[in-house]
Image 1 (cartoon, helix red, strand yellow):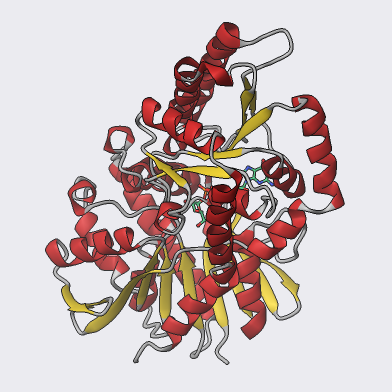
Image 2 (image 1 turned 30 degrees about the vertical axis):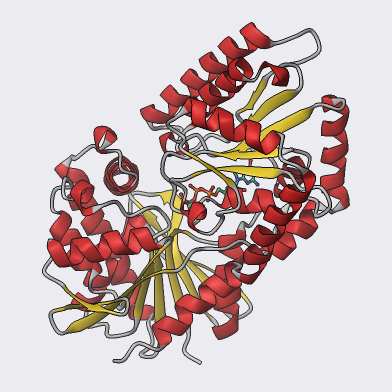
Length: 458
Ligand code: GDG
């Protein structure tokens, strides 16, 4: 069996430390099956940067190989083009995008340097699987070094409509570089369609039907491979004694009341201020929930150095202060806003103890929290998921209460539907979602990408 080489910005962990999410578990599983390399940034900045000595660690047949970058690479590639240009554009936020041309140059340079360091490690029959928006142009660099191995790519975040992407300077060149991959995978059918449309309408590719486009003399497979979680393991985690401890603590605190849970990195794509406003609207429009249904928002900080994130955090603190000031009672706090992270097993327990999972991103590639919330529920009395139509997860979780996160009235009405939903209906809807999560888990996701990449005609 051909060896697998995974490339992603951050690498590992190789061992299941209890912190690893479904993605790391799925990739380690795929790597262990064939043996291989997981290659990416070390997370460190050094003066030698991509010219530094490779950092290597091994666990059985899998080798982790990591590379530093320089401060200038960090500013232009990571904080710059990846997070200030591509992240907003791909999440449909042209208003937040910074089109600094130096960012783009550094991004292309760092992609080239990573390719130059990976190239010498490759064997002729390796299959290479590259992840996410940090490495859109990576395949073109490898092809420039005469690498002819099968190259697959998966985008974890949304791919916008061509009308949006066209605003990105040099979008055509970036997409043409992506057409150097043999397979380009997305979270949803919509994302795959958007990419195909851009490739055909703007970049000169031809649609061959059957999820394929031609560009020059190459055929590229373009398809949706919705990512899954390790549903069975997460469900068991939610029943573990450790999770149980958290459930007990929360239940004591709630004293018979109920809780809505939100868990998101602080990021403008996650629709957090809109969510707080929708909850405020619920208390206004459906006053029977006052004193009875609180909102707990867990929001570990992310990429805290970016101004946009500091601003959202401040806004959320203000909003929660306002709602709490207005509606709190001596023994009841409406919003509990926790800007810290929790161990995974605690999270599983918190999901399980919450009657509603509220997942309302303005745009999201998939959103694994939606899937984890469902996996953590009690089969006999499951909580209900209220889910944004703009999360990739909505394509596969139609039994959730689907809402438009921009409309506070609609989210409030959705919350009311969820809280008053009869037990039979909750059970039926939950069972359908849970069965689908188990069938389409993280391992089956990576297998289906691997099967398609192996079927590529060379
Ligand atoms: C990108 C795409 C796509 C959160 N707080 C804590 C914690 N988490 C974990 C959750 C979940 C993960 O982080 C977040 O995953 P999401 O899918 O919701 O979002 P992104 O981080 O933006 O991920 C996204 C994903 O890639 C995969 O393809 O679904 O659309 O944006 O697993 O549980 N984990 C722990 N403590 C916390 O406090 N341990």
